[in-house]
Amino acid sequence: MNFFNATPDDGFFDDRYAEKVLHSEYIRIGTKQRQFGDLVLFVAQNKIRRMCVQIAGDFVFTKSGRGPFEPWLVTKTKDLIKVSLPERPFEVRVYRRKVPPRFAINELDIPALD
Image (cartoon, rainbow, N blue to C red; front, side, top):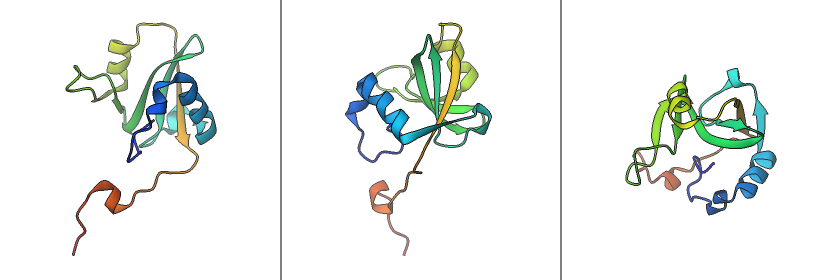
């Protein structure tokens, strides 16, 4: 949920806070409508088991890397399911921000083109 945030929000460590933000700042969309930046959630027994960010096609960005020095990973959705979701059955839910993120060049620390 911090994918577009210039400064990470530590509140997302609290599941209740994350769900509150999810339901207030995001809308649920169809799984076939996924686009860059959407949240892809895997829900089992009515609880979020895994969350990742849609990149392109079947690729997602997730916190399932090899270890503490490589915590993030770009992977295919089916590979993430194989490795990280032993619990069956599960449901895939996709959410999109109600207000699209905006970036200022200075926030991204990109030099201005002159």
